Amino acid sequence: MRLHPLELRIPPPVVALLIAVAMWHSERVIAPFDVPPGPRLAVALAVLVVGLAVGISAVAAFRRAKTTVNPLKPEAAAALVDTGIFRHTRNPMYLALMIGLVAWAIFLASALALLIGFAFVPYINRFQIEPEERVLGEKFGAAYQAYAARVRRWI
Image (cartoon, rainbow, N blue to C red; front, side):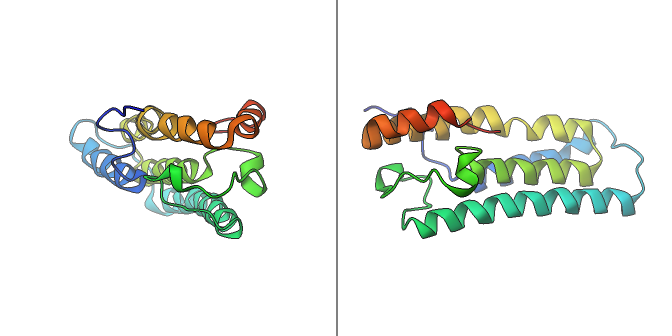
């Protein structure tokens, strides 16, 4: 199977961090909204806590199944995890990163930052999730296909 040069190459947390930096610099293009820091921080922290809960529950499910959490080596998966948070989303770790980017945009009080943050979704879909799905489909066959048919990729 031939991979595109960007497929499974950049760890998703690094992609999220690079996008977060771009979001931070977006205020140079368009000024943020004038929102008091207290409420802005409170809402951003609440959203961040949701993202952390999603991400931690996903990692815990992988640990219980004794399978890898390394996103660059999907062929090392030892089990198809379809319990816990994985009953609701096939990619809770990436969803957690996206929720973190939304929290960052709220903290920055910037619509442009939010728009930049959502660039994470098409990038991760194309260069991380699609190659993972090919590998998991080959490795787990009909079980993975049935799982993918009943559980959405994101939410």
